[in-house]
Image (cartoon, rainbow, N blue to C red):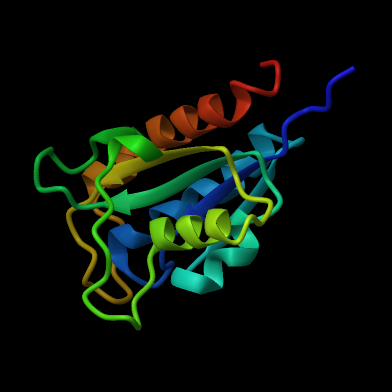
Length: 156
C-alpha cells in the first residue's frame, strides 16, 4: 500500500501590506477546507523558507503577484517549470526558486511537485491598507483553486 503524498500549502505575504495580505487571508479558510493538509502562512523569504519547503512531496504556494499583464483579481496557476527563474540582484537575495534549487542541490527532502496559485494585485505598497476590492472579490476563487490543487493528490 502506498503512502499518501505529503502536501503543504504555503501562503506567503505580509498581513500588514494591502493586497500582499491575501495569502494570510486565504490560510484560515484553506485550513478549514483541507484538514489533512499542512497549511502554513509566512512573511519570510529566501533561506528562511527552507523549513517550509523541506519534508513535503507537493508544495502549493499561495501568493500575490504583480505581472502587469492581467487585471487585479485575476487568479493565475503556474507550475514551477512554467516560470523563468530570475536570480536576485545580489548574493544577499535568495527567493523561493533559489531556495528550491538549494534544497535539490543538497539532496534535502524537498518537493517534486511545486504549483503556485497567485492573484494579480493592485497595491503592495500601502502599509496598514486594506486588500483592494478586486483582490478581495477574487479571494474565494483563489481559495477554491488552491484547495483543488492541494486536494488533487489527496483523493478528493
